[in-house]
Image (tube, rainbow, N blue to C red; front, top):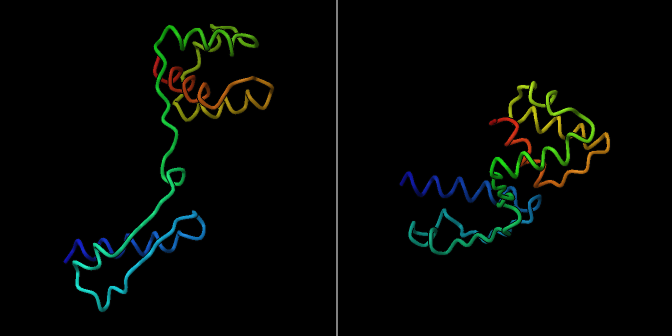
Length: 120
């Protein structure tokens, strides 16, 4: 019974998000249907783009260091970058700021650089 209520809550949440997220939900009237019908008669179609975030693979240290040299040392010394100790979120913010100043960094490189800099 707990699983049925959990499923009902999840489906209700998905139905509430449907117009905003482009999620299509075909729900069954759960007040009159047996529990087995609710589970099998309910169909949820969620576009892959609505649920999946891009997965960024970390670069090996040599490739990450090369990317750092290519993208960051154009304006900053490597020593200055190495002295900074920041979290990954702080590096993401810093890289965003540098992009605002004209740095050319793709979204994938952005995430890879932040990951590398935070974990070195």
